[in-house]
Length: 140
Length: 140
DNA sequence: AAATATTTTGTATTAATTACAAAATTGTAC
DNA sequence: GTACAATTTTGTAATTAATACAAAATATTT
Image (tube, rainbow over the protein chains, first blue to last red):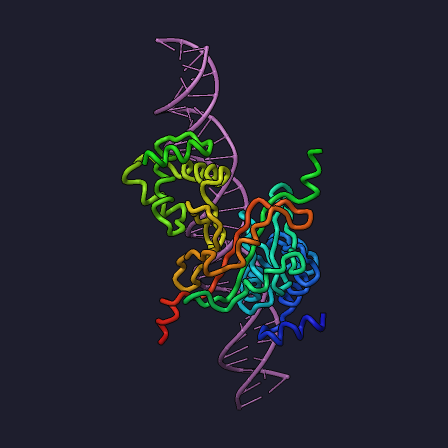
């Protein structure tokens, strides 16, 4: 938790109790949670937490590059405390979102260019969709 | 318009007047339009068109692979009648969405794999975000 | 033409997100 | 340490994209 404080500070984010709890949650739960999921999980320990704070904080984290906003789920935004370059996969049956790292996808890094033609690139989101192994094996 | 009819039929979509008009619009406007934009554009020629029909039809087109649902815009879903493999870029200043084709991105094709590990891939969406040349030059 | 299936439509609802201003907290100046 | 200022948090209300649903319209089959 102390390291979370430093992590936020070093990225220009003043470490309030709420912000530390939210960052901590993202760092410990790499499940690409929704706002609802984060809110429910934190409510027991932060009973006054408001959704507005959560939305504001996640936006701040995204701006300051300590979290990724994922648009892979068509119903809602998901968040990821892991900001290293990687791709995501969502199972269209169970809805689960999984990481795909470079060792499975060697071409990935080269896609994180700073410029393409005349366009200045600030971020890249790579989203795969399909059916996960667990769900595929259910119809056997 | 006759070719649009055949295009839909050959993809297992019964070509109603509404469906042809919507498909036609997507094929002629490669601007990655929102539901609102398609609706406003078609209303003069299809005055009874309902939003529900539009949503249903675009979902059908996506399922039948004659259109792409794009999640690049955090506010709303956008649609693309061009189903050839390509990536997209959204300018965070003006909101415009642009195509990025393979000649600018040689590694792209290899990302369209059918399988990664145990995951069956059915689609890939690659979204770049940043600032377009036009918007970047405004602050000069 | 009657019966059936499909498509379209309009209304009502849901649910994610944002706007906004008051309250609380934190930091700074004296 | 108290007063003042800035920041953060909170709750409520509003917005808006998207969906549910059943009736109406259209197309297809018998």
